[in-house]
Image 1: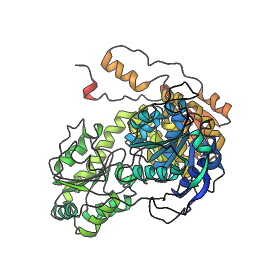
Image 2: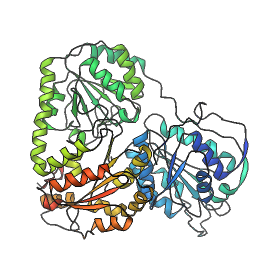
Image 3: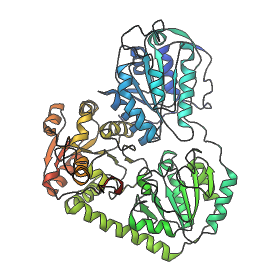
Length: 564
């Protein structure tokens, strides 16, 4: 299942690869995806995409991974993109299939992930007529445009390659996001003379050299520099440049949750994903120059934008629209994170930072860890340590929105390499299994999925996908018999419970029915044995962990959601 390295072509992005060739519309899609460097497509066969599905299946170097629900096919394409850095592609049907896919596109856009949805449309003769044709949705394009950077209808077979390549280039340039194309079924079957377009990468946006020069001057004169690394560092594959700059400046690095892995969290300068934690807040406040890279300064990472950044702020991002949106930038720099950081590495002076500041930075991490261990209790501290000890350094950690993810998966479980930390950036519940399927299929590496019993049930059918492809996943379902986050929030905010105590099945029996080995876990020792066996096993394993048998977790309620 893992991707194999190949070079589809060396032509420039969007350029014509060959002269016009006679192809069906489905073949034009497949040939274009090959030129875009795609090696996996996640999809569901339907009457309105069969020509495309067949052509991709027969293409050289692309595998179609058959998912069970369109939403999770898009999540899988998203996970694939985040784990590999390649364009993620999902193939679904028009009408109900595309409607199902919308939630996946929403997450991909929120998480800045380059995901392309390819879907069908009804026959051209009936398109837009509102006649009640099978799977008809004459407003599908308008719907897609609400959750993508760009969505297009392709009206002619001759335009298929050009439009797909153009949309793919658009959503990969600058800040990556989702895109979509819809193709009427008759244009998929039809043969025509088609020029082929597409390239496996796009050129980075131009770098603001004047901003770089000003940043160099400030960093060279800083006594207490600090780097704030967001998800844009990871998506630009800029981790080597980030680490090199941190070491050259002798500057501590704090990351957002999406920026985890941009610097190994066992590096001496790594403060981890603690931008809003009390001890690290003081370190941010002490910095005289803060270099923020690839970040929007989202609400939870900034204490609902109440976090103070009193030092001079340099904000480097590929998206000019996010610079200055939440925090005023003293020095705005529009640049690709890899190119911009690389230029700074070339130009800044090697130096040594105030030793007292570095010492306080290191102590802030230790102090915050002590608070975190107290919050999660001894059993979950042990689980976190076991996971990090037994999971390979390059193993992927995919965390759905659930209490163990919030309290120790997101914060204290060390992430040691880029593109190994994935979560629903929008904090939606349930995408975890889809993200994990795509990340695992694309990377071929051992993948841990942390999910809750409530969220896991939304994508339960994707266990069949895991089983079909024998993906090397360790699926940890933390079962507290309901929606644990909302349960604690209702107790703290509402004073009563409703809608949160739900029936949960025996997940091990479902896994057994899928042909996936499984175990019940009710103690730390049982977890260590079962997790170790799962990591060593070829293929998938499901562990159902009884949260009620472990020391309790208390989810902290944000101040703005507490009752007065």
